[in-house]
Amino acid sequence: MSIRKNTLWNLFGSGGPMLIGIVVVPYLLAQLGVERLGVLTLIWALIGYFSVFDFGLGRALTQQVSSLRASGNMFLMAGTIRSGLTLLAWIGGVGMALALLLLVYFDASWLDVSPALQTDVTRCLALAALSIPATTLTSGLRGVLEGMEQFREVNLLRSLLGISNFIAPVLAISWQGPSLTVIVAFLLIVRLVMLALHGWLVWRHTRDGAGIAAPLDRAAMRKLVSFGSWMTISNIASPLMLLADRFLVASLVGAAVVAYYAVPSEVLLRLLIIPAALSSTIFPAFTRHLASSVDDARKLYRRSALAVFCVMGPLMLVVALGSHPGVSVWLGESFADKAYLCIVIMAGGIVLNSLAQVPYALVQGAGRARLTALLHISELAVYVPTLYWLTEAYGIAGAAAAWSLRAAFDALALHLMARRILQPSLALKNAV
Image (cartoon, rainbow, N blue to C red; front, top):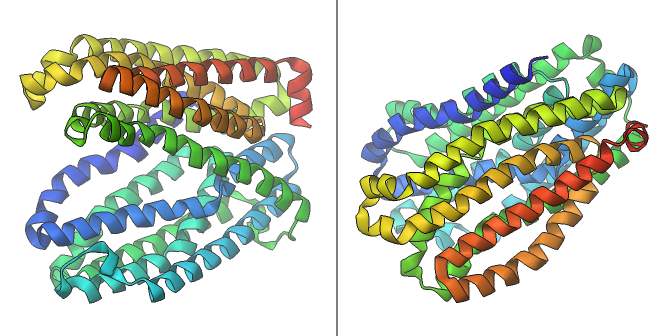
């Protein structure tokens, strides 16, 4: 396994579709118009958001498959895979039923679209709801493949899915014109094809399809649900901490000022794709090493932290030093005068947040999702009042300072957790 190659594949899988989108979106705007394109972006976001219906089971499958694979217990691994996928099928089916039921009582009128589009949008929402089982099952299958460290295949499919999300509307328009219903039907077909491809790869990488034929394992289900439930808490708390700042800025300082904070922070947060690519790679590797050699896990931890710092440290230094002239060229000198200080403050927070992803991957790779969930709940309880106080006192610079302070605390707390897990006696306990 090559950490470097797998990280590059992760970057390709996440960043490749963005380049296609830059080319395709102007065409879609010309063909669909502003309102239809706006609805399409909502459908894109909605279908992507349906991945939360996996309730952390995709990540749980990655951790369990990696651990069992390291121990050589292929029969138990096969049972765990089938148990996890069965849970996800049930969850996806229930999620689809609930979404369709809500659609019966709440049609598309709440979106405030023009009357001519009401029926079309309602059909689109129904088709989007039908994609929930495919989305949740694909998330689980992807988790299995990542547990097997098949990152090249995972990211080829992720890139293909991302590209297809843009190409499918183009094909639909060329066939039937600017019909949102046809476009979303094409997107649903894409999801089903991706589900089939992920399923085929998992079948190919398990012993003679044993992952499908193995019996259900109730103990494995309990482990997956336990890990996944704590993951869900983190998945809820983390986005709240990422989004709370701009809403409080709007409330305390004024909506007119939000752009000076939100635009640069959004760009900086996009750069977290770089450490995230490494984090996804080392997560199953940590699980495997903790089950066999704590020394290897410790070495990987140090190398990963150093690599993140060597990439993100200089990058954020350049961003901080060039914030005013860069924003002046991009959005004008007046905008830069008001926004550059936020960029300088948040640049340090981005480095710390990037570093935090290494111990985060180790703690969860050790199966300790409960620790990260409790940490994020504690952070949220402290971060919101701190954000309120600093924003009220210092405006958008205070909001940036609150965000960076939270990132510093998060990085320190996770690092202390990781150090404890990397103690030989505890690592052996985690592996068992």
